[in-house]
Length: 195
Image (cartoon, rainbow, N blue to C red; front, side, top):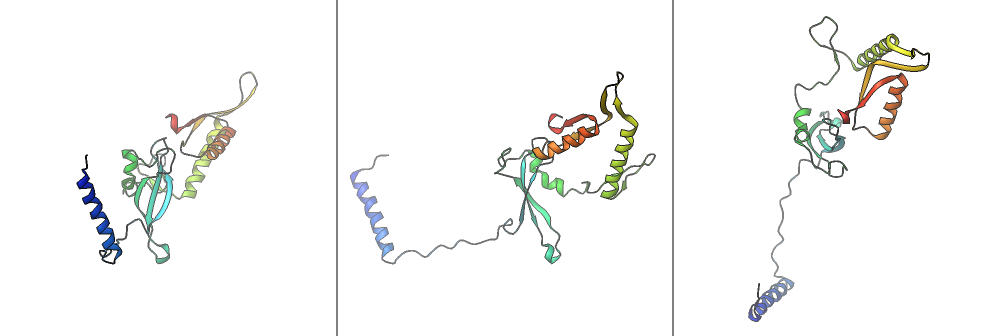
């Protein structure tokens, strides 16, 4: 773009005149922006990990509600965590639809068991579920544990049960999980990232 000498003087004069008038007190009134309350201003932010696949994308979950006023907190918005090293704020279509997953009426929120011979699921408490899993694991381990192989060497194997670990766990959690599972003698131990 070429600016002639005459155009340069016109632009300069207009700028100098406008700034001089403003300095003399003839400035326009301040523009007031309409202040609206953004819906996430009062929400509680919680960092979490996406439950879908083994990528372990970071999430920011926002909940509203005040337990001191007997208002139950509920998740109202979920987005990618821009500070997370895995996804840097982006989410796949499944992760972007997590709010529907959380509020789905079909979402299982408590343990259930289907007894042998029954045709329906029965709701049980978390304590009953933990006790049941522990009792069934002990029963299976006692029945199928192999202490020595055919040559008489100590092997301490439990071949009838396996364990699938979560890939979104921390290094420390993975280490402890590995130690606990291997100490029982389980050989079939895998990670969700390989599935």
